[in-house]
Image (cartoon, each protein chain N blue to C red):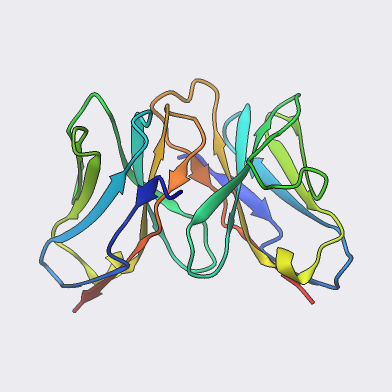
Length: 112
Length: 117
């Protein structure tokens, strides 16, 4: 039972353009959502988070949008840079500090 | 920022060997740590929640006698894979949430690649 899904296994974007990564979840108890960036053989690196009381959170080039009624969140990266190329995981928990349920990941490739 | 250190980063050993992996929080106290496992091209799956001073909570399907977790201090949790077999080969990653961690994200170690021959 995959409670957090990332339906696009890969995404290719031109440098300077916007990257939009999507994530859907099914568990209505999830209250806190995060995006992590991961390289092979390394641990995930935290990018940005959002709690369910908000619908948008922005940090530099990264913006996360949450649509609670649709159980959908997205990560926008603008402008995209080649160094952003990695696998991106969305994750959810029932509260901050609680165990995380991860999505299946989306491999982003930013073309120079 | 918060730093989580994991050691060793890579282990290759023979079948039947027990392997210990350490996870340390370097600049904060972690009452709770989490252990995840990632198989190639798959997502991270939670194995267990490690609680300082008490027994770990294991996810369904994870054998607690095979994956021993000890969280003896606020800065160290260990995962011991006992009598490891080739099917235990995987990438193991720990994460930590600190005291008063509301609103704070979990930070992850760099992972341990375990290869059982």
